Length: 230
Image (cartoon, rainbow, N blue to C red; front, side, top):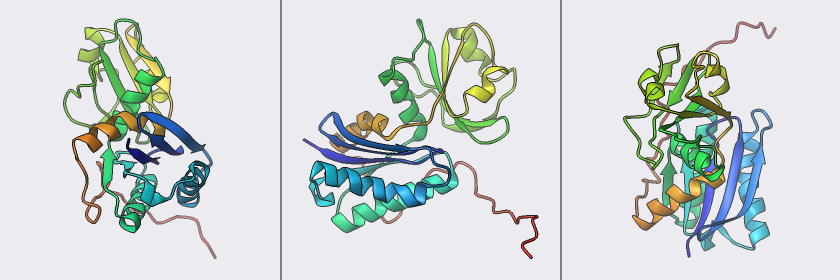
């Protein structure tokens, strides 16, 4: 059976998990602000110690590929790549919307008669990174960035009940309010990466450890603080 290290750092939640076959045997979570760099590698070590494993005992490392927080994704991918390089393990990438879709299924969140599951990752103001999934997991179209207004997702909402899930869901609830709109505010968890990661493992869909980059969707723009330091 495959043993996987799972790392999800695309939002404010720092989340890691360890799996043995199709079971999650250990999980670490923290919502402490801006702590991904300090906690991700520590969480992985704590889980391995608890399981009595070394990194070399694992079959692969799976990491969330984004979109999401630029800093969080950089920390997650750097940690995953370091583990893979050090132990000679393959690298698996799972998109953040796919993690959220699987989380919706695992948590039994789909409303009765659900026609679409729409992950929403907060991109500040009224912008979200989103995708549209059918209830059987087929992604309809591409992952995109969109500014949410009253006309957003009109076709999907007219088609039937839709679940909006992610850390960008609540801020869109008032704008998209209608009988077919259901909202679940949450961050993606590493444990919800297991299904897609195992499928990628079986199909040998691995990333190039040397050249893998997260899917930021938008370029990172550094700004200069207006506060005077001296």
